[in-house]
Image (tube, rainbow over all chains, first blue to last red; front, top):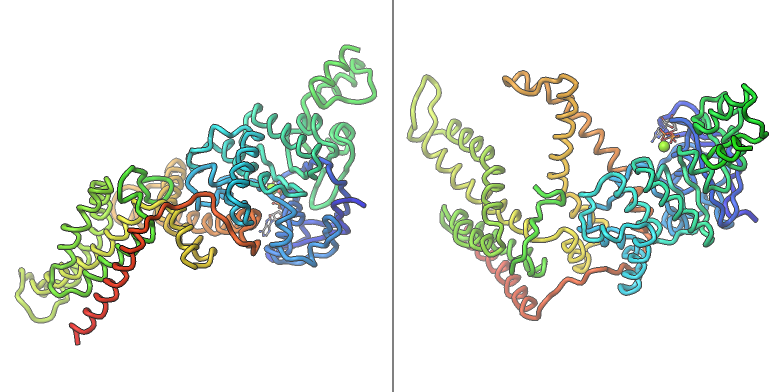
Length: 279
Length: 258
Ligand SMILES: Nc1ncnc2c1ncn2[C@@H]1O[C@H](COP(=O)(O)OP(=O)(O)OP(=O)(O)O)[C@@H](O)[C@H]1O
Ligand SMILES: [Mg+2]
C-alpha cells in the first residue's frame, strides 16, 4: 500500500471565497521523492499544510476527502502525533527560527529537546544532521546573523534532525545560490534513498529533472498533470498553462520547429540537451 | 542592540551566575526599594547596588544608556503632569493659569526613583542572562514550557520590533513617504509604518506557531535539554537567604505602612 494517500481532497480557508484545493487524489510510495510545481496561488503551500496536518488542525476551514500517511488518517489523529511523523519546512526561513536559542547548534537541537532525546544522542544527531547539510561551520553563530540561504539550510536541518518519515519542503531553496540548491537536492535525494518519503515544492525544474522521481503540476488547486519529471516538464500542457519551463526545453522546442531537434523526447537539463543536439 | 534580545555577551561573574539567582536578586532589590522608607531609597539602590553590579557584569555603560533612553521620556511626562496638575503648593512660575508646583515635581521625582529601580533591575538581568538559559531555568522551576517560551520570546519583541520598524521605515521612505519634519508630518507617517508592522507580526506569530509545532513543541514528551546550566551549592544557599529577604521586605513594607 502507498505510504501517502490523498483521496479526493478539497479544502477552503475560512476567509477564502472558493476552493483552494480541489479534487486532489494522489498516492506516494515510501522512499519516493515527489516534486510539486505550480504558479503563485496554485495551492502548493496549502497542499503542504494538508500533508503536515496543519490543514485542518491549525487552519480551520472546510475540508473534505482524506489525507492518509502510513495507514493513519490525519482527521483521526492529533496535530501533535502527526508532527512526529511528518516534518514541514516552509517558505519563510526567518519565522522558522524558534527565537528561544542562542546558537545554530542549539536551534537545531530545539526539536530534539522537545521530544526528549537524551543529551549525548542529541549532540550526535545534531552534528550528523549539520554535516549532512553542510552547515557544521555555522554551529556557533546566532541564527539571526545568517543570510537567507543559510537560514533555509538551518530550517531544513532542524526538520531533518527530527527524522520524520514524511518530509514536506515548501520552496526550501528559494533564497539559495546554485551551489546551495544543488546540495539541498543532493541531501534530499540521499534521504529518499534511505527510505524517507519527500514532497518538495520547487520552481527549479532542471534540478527537479535531475533528482526527483515524480512531478506533480498544480494549478488553481487542482492537479493539472503528473508523472515522470521528463514527461511532465516537457509537456505542451505545461506551456499552454503558463508554467515556467527549462531554457533547454524552450531551445529544443524552437529547434524542433526548424528541424534541428530530431529526438522525440525534449530535454530538461543541459546534459540531455547536449546529448540530443549531438545526435 | 543585539539581535537576540538585550543580552550582552560578556565574560563576567554576573553572567555566570545561575539565572534563578539573578531573578531572585533583582526581586530582592525591587522589594527593598519599594518597602524601605525614605524618598530616595530607589535612587540609592540604583546608584550604590545596581550600578556596581552592572560594573561587575561589564555592562555598565550599556545599562546606563538604555535606562536613560527608556526613562527619559517617561520622566519628562510624569514631571510635567504631576507639577502642572498638583493642587495647592509652591509655584515654580506663574503664567496666566499655568502654574506648576514644586511639590508635584518632587512627588514625580520620588516616584521615578521606584520606576527607574524596577527598570534598571530588569534591564541588568536581561543584559547578563541568555534568554535560552532563562527558558530552561523557568522550565526546571516548574513553569509550563509554553509559558516559558512566551516569556522568553516576548523579551525579544522590543529589539525585533525595532529592527522591523526600521526596515519598514526604509521601505516606505524609498516610496516617498515623508517621515521627517513637523509633528503633523510625523503623525501622518505613523500609519503606513505601524500597519505593516502589526499585520506582519500577526502572520509571523502564525508561522512561528507552525514552525515550533513541526518541531515537536507540543509532543507531550518529557523534555530534555542540550545545555546544562552551572549551579553551585553556595548559590543554592544564597537563593534561600534571598528568598527569605524578599519575604522579610514584603512583611516589613506592609507593617511599616500600617
Ligand atoms: N491563511 C490563508 N487564509 C486564506 N486564504 C489563504 C491563506 N493562505 C493562502 N490562501 C489563499 O489560498 C490560495 C493558495 O495559496 P497558497 O499559499 O497555497 O499558494 P502557493 O501555490 O503556495 O503560492 P506561492 O507560489 O505564492 O507560494 C491563494 O489564493 C491564497 O490567497
Ligand atoms: Mg507557497
